[in-house]
Amino acid sequence: MLAIFAMAVFCVGFFYVRELTDVNSETKKAENYTQAVLAGALAIFEGDLSENAMIADYWKPKGHTTKSLLGVLGLSFPCTYDDYMNRWAEKFVDPEDRELYLDRVNRNILMNAYNNSESEIFFDYKAVTSDGREIFVRQSIFMAEDRRSGNVVAHANLREITEQKEKDIAFQ
Image (cartoon, rainbow, N blue to C red; front, side, top):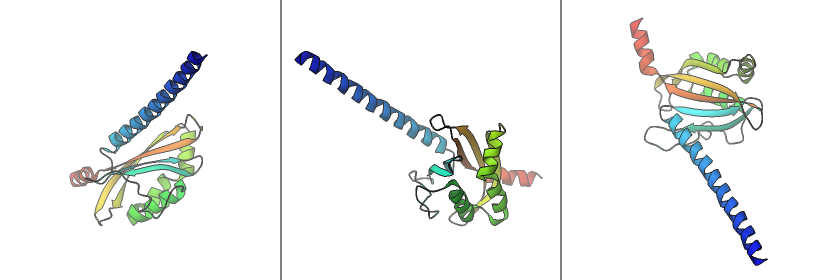
């Protein structure tokens, strides 16, 4: 009887440790993926379009650690996707491009695009950095259905393209 009890404790312990290992492995994979995506990005974010909720945002200034922009935007989790996009536009998007930006990241427009089999949106805009420099940004939004919830989630990647834009302008 003691042997059966010991075996049961071993099995429970083994599966518990294995489950923790699997969770830690998945967490590490997610962290590695985030770092890889951020490698060439100004910022990335995820928003649940179906629920109007921000899931995550990451920003990694050169030479610094990854952090969230929520505090810079005057927000905290939980916050809505709409509030985040509006604050982002107010804080970082050049006034000339703000209307275009808000139209492109509009949750209803993105949901409509996704429902019409358009899962990728790309657009460029002029932004103003926190130190006042004007830069050009290419924002890519990839939309997919979350396997667990069935909600439509937007994954955005923002890259600086100032050098490329300046070359294009000079070429014209």
